[in-house]
Image: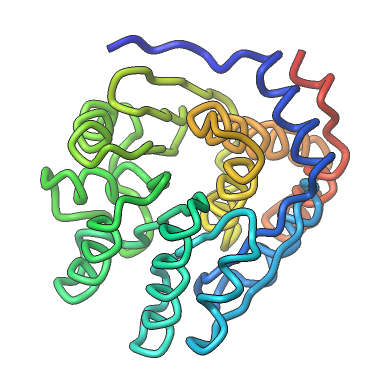
Length: 262
């Protein structure tokens, strides 16, 4: 299985498309990260919406470009809304992204996550411990934090992608995005991103946004990862800690231009 770097030209074209079309991203995400998720999408060039009632989530998915399902704070009413949105996404051929937060940590949660995996997301985006858990190889990380490096989960991600016929993005020091046959790598970023709540969850929303504007979901996912990493690097030029990093990260997402990838 080949591993290649994401093409700068491809990333540039994807960012241009995102900002031209400003896709509507339906985010069913956890309560902890709603603010940063919405702001990340807006800063990058997409349009966020968080319609969470079961009565309207399915309909709203039909008019959205992409859907995010983040299993951060699951409860019965929210899960019903999530399934309604996913079922509509499948019916209307909308791309949807699964963020399996804390997979491998709690049996009930794992059961919930597996019901979504069975519906074959367009992309599964998780940290190394979450991907290893989904592949049945480890129990998971420390709560929502990974205890494994992304390199350790690469083969598991490739096997999971092939077995489930989905794209799997395992993120960490280097991000790996794979369909099981082709794998793209995206290095870079900054460790400070791990000290700000919601950077990973909002990345999954970015993936949904990029997948909404193209059928090349592998490159789209890798471009979302590359944009987040480049923004983290740019943010750290002026940030002094997690608080200032949060604001600088949003500014960087807004300021980065397609030509910056060339």
